[in-house]
Length: 127
Image 1: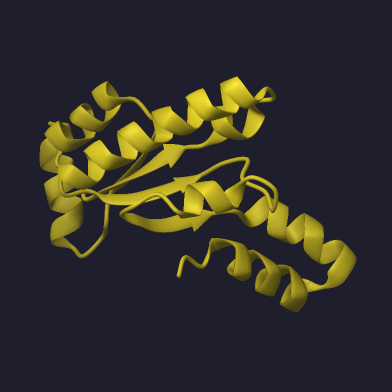
Image 2: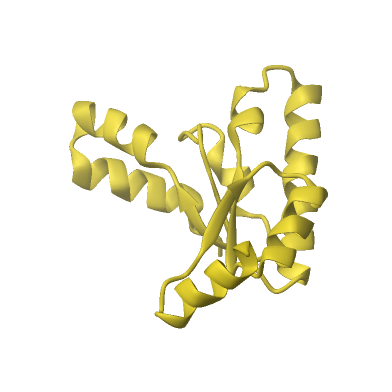
C-alpha cells in the first residue's frame, strides 16, 4: 500500500523523500517503498563529541550516502549541522542538498542574513 501511495504522489509531480537514520537497512526500505529521495539524519554526527565518535558517525553517514546514491536515490542530509561541522558532510559524493536552517538563522541574528548565507555557502561549496 505505501509503495502505491508513493507512486500516486510522484505521478502528480511531487517528490517523496524520507527522513531516515544513516543505516543501510533504512535506505533499503526507502528503495523498496519506491521513493525518489532520502534525507539522512545528521544529528548523531552533529552531537558526537570525541574525535573517535565524530569519525564513526561520519563513516556511518558516508556508507549510507554511498549506498543511497548507488541505488539511484537523490541524497539530502540535515539536522544539527553548523558552521563548524558542515564542511566535511558537504564533501560527501553524490550529495544533492543540505538542510541547515537553524544554524544560519541563529548566525544571522548577529551578522545579518546576507553575511550568514554567504559564509555558509563558502563552507559547503565544493570545488
